[in-house]
Image (cartoon, rainbow, N blue to C red; front, side):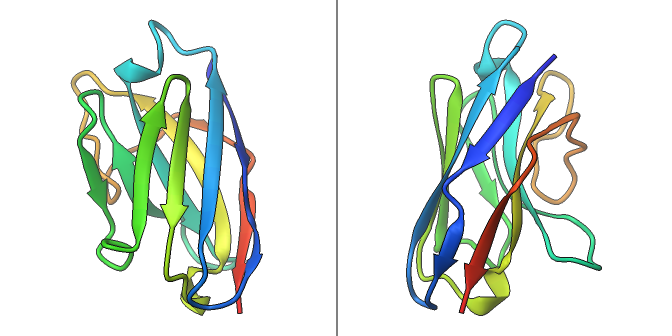
Length: 124
């Protein structure tokens, strides 16, 4: 049973930066067998996948964050470096995972099986 814990959220002014971290446990054969992603949600809206990293380390991004956000992986942790933040980036950010083999790893279509509790990011 995969467990994910996010950290690093907070409040920042527009144009600023934040780095989110996600620590995971319970992976079968290790995190590198999973598609790992960051998903965000604004109240009353659907969750929105914004970045993923697959088993080979390839990354994909939602268009609106491409060039500003970077997802990375290190051991049993993943990170989301967020630069040039905008007020529309305000949301709760979730770390998510699903077994990668035989499944698409894409921010717009991945069906994640495991989720963290989320961390709030507020940009003013």
